[in-house]
Image (spheres, helix red, strand yellow):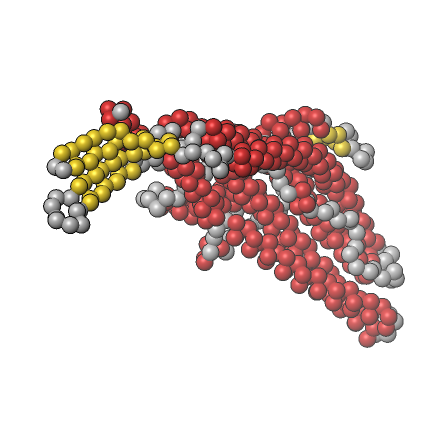
Length: 487
């Protein structure tokens, strides 16, 4: 028995000596998971000299006019909350290493002195360890491995989430900048109308009610400009916050031109039947659902949760059958002579027979399976919702590009020609130009809705489900304020 104890003790030391925590290896696994899902680079700032290279990369990206891709890359390199999430990998890998270690042996000692007469004390020493640890080791490693894989998927999901939120924030900031520019044009237009009405009123050529109507338009436009300025500042700040910028670096150079809706659908399963007819959305929901399910990191993590719960239930079942067993050796000196022998302690399962642990394990397993099925339902539903949302937003954006905006521009040009021919007044020209600017402002809403829907669907196909209530509503074209019917 002493020989067996010594062998096991040396084995335990060997296990402890070979095992090591390597967080970078866990991060490499995350990079491998992300490799086919995003083109952006991820890096873990660990307080080494390589962090300076990350800061230099961020500064280089900020040196030029900010693009959506650059904003995403900066966020992935510079967002502190994402960096904090990476530490979950270290925790999960440490738990995995810990699961592969045997419990430390317990060493005990005692000394007994005779109460009367004095003399040398009787000494006793013992060493013991959890004998069944050797058998539990594979099960515990299986639990830790499943938990580690789930953590890896969740960290990868956090990366994709941040990238998608940054891209969406960039789109909204751009759209708000464009709305602000269009609202400034409307203010200039209504101010010109109000000035003209005031001069005509002073000359006695328009009634007082027309002057009041122009003034009301002008004041409402100024209020709308105030709201637009606030929205633009807030959306820009959201983007800066996601990129982790502060100080002078937070003064980003953001272009105001949103890219137009592409004429050809970039996704084969979301397209329009014809570009001339409404509605024209054609969605291959079955193909889209299949791709979303195959890519889903949420499902992969939920699947690992099921395996973790199953492994824990297995441990609970084994522990309820095999009681705790400690084995070791004892050395004792009595009357000057040393004696040695094996020592074993067994926990008698009289009261706690593991029934509660087994019941808890079964409940955890049922819950994990139910959540897995719920995630599968959510992913499929999200695929259908986002595909339809993208098709609708694409059709609306194309309608603005091909019909509404050219029509408004032609109407303004025709009205100006009528004014030059003295067939209409100055207010007719101003009204046509104002409605053209309002259509451009509504077009910004349509573009933002399309690119946001596109980003959400891309995120789903990368493996992460976006919030379904985050879509931007399309606004109808046309004036947002009462237009006087006169002149």
